[in-house]
Image (cartoon, rainbow, N blue to C red; front, side, top):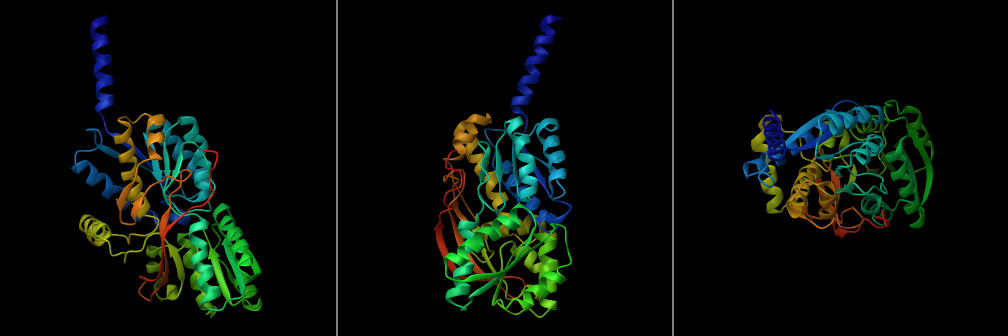
Length: 378
């Protein structure tokens, strides 16, 4: 009997070691991020399908565990807890709101697993288990502000944001950079993250004398409502959006035309890697394809970066994988990405302007932009 039990235990251990490597994706399938979340899931599914077709990772298949974080803190706590302690995922790789990320980080620390955050954000989120392969303000804001001041003669800026970590963090950096550049901020106003009536704020914008407006909302739905109301109010001054992605811009229709964005990914990147990615994702999802964008493509690359780290470490052991994540790179749709700078990534940035069909015309390109001081103590 004892021998039989020992044999069963050995069999169970062997099965666990040979079972799938599970990647958790808590993401806003509902709430503010619901506009962009489906494209993030599609990118993850493509990456996993490609990796599994090529033999997996260390001879094991990858499996996705997806949970709705409702785009906020309360939903994230439930989603992270379920993924880390019930589903027992090996890593979390996802795009989320900053509120969701901040709520999930203590659970990541307690569960001690790697967390690759694939969303652009306000910067300086530092945790031994957290790596970021998306942009921060130091990479994203200067191209827009510099263009407005030097090319379009803007001197007075009005700032509009969602009232949470990302909205305030981005505009805090933008305000400091604007003033450092010799221009002024004549207004700065916020609406709750789920807010949709921007009437009073737009009225203040119109009376402020501003000759440029920069917005930083919770992505997705707030972007759509704010832009629609800005256009409806006849706002025609240069408009820079620090939170819109190409997919959301397409969903806005003609309202998005003319918006300036600064992004690490646009579909028009002419590299072979991007062309191959676009062909592969179009083939996989056909008519159901959501436009790849600056929130979904880092998800695709994040899974490949995790694969590279596990293979370099030779194990899914957390300590070994975290050590490897700072050293590996992956060449994908955005070029070669490595989270080598204080758990963040130097990135090529594109200043673009949205056209009437929602596509983005690249105005200027900035190679290898450094993320600056983010987590010097890691």
